[in-house]
Image (cartoon, rainbow, N blue to C red; front, side, top):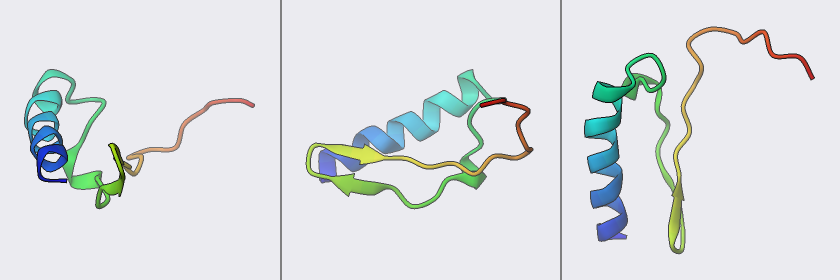
Length: 52
């Protein structure tokens, strides 16, 4: 889990700088760890207009 946290920290440092409209670190929930992967959840800042 320590390596997984290292990768998450790197991701959360670099990606918001590259894609600021996509990832906002203030909207991230706590990571959920499942063995060899982690689930990162982000709350949307605005409602989407996606149709199903």
